[in-house]
Length: 232
Ligand code: F6R
Image (cartoon, rainbow, N blue to C red; front, side, top):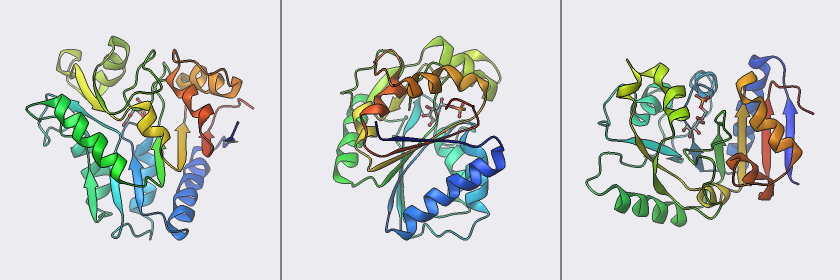
């Protein structure tokens, strides 16, 4: 297995290490970054905003976007990325799936073609409590490409904290598929907090199963996992 686990009990040091990985990738010539949203990424993006790193020659592709809320909605991933990173650290080109497309399935195909035309140097990942990556929920085939997903009630409940009520949480999203994610040359997964323990323990165990999407990373040659959980 080519997963390198690093346990950092101090979150500040953990996120410094994440910046360090990204900085090294940049120095080594990486220009295409797969980005993620979610609470896990907020401290990382804060550190990137405050860093001297320059992404102005780089392009980004985000993992996913909600369907059915406008781009300028406060909780769209477009808005998240703008506020957390892009306004302070401009990229040459940024890409997110368009959750407002008239035909979201066609949009998923367009996004997958875009991904295939790129050489994704690094993909940042968080992980859901149920082991999801992107919005690939348990039982998603590892061969999946970018597609439209119906969000599970557990994911909608977990994300309800960002909305006024659970009813406002979108029911669908467009997400990179598992095979789209695994095409990245390097994957940097960050998992912080007890809620992520089951998912990370499954990864450490190395039993690859579509019931726990994050275990698909065991099939990838170059993964770094940064966690504050004492799992190794
Ligand atoms: C975000 C994403 C999700 C999150 C995961 C963890 O773009 O694709 O898979 O990484 O839901 O979310 P947080 O970080 O909020 O615990």
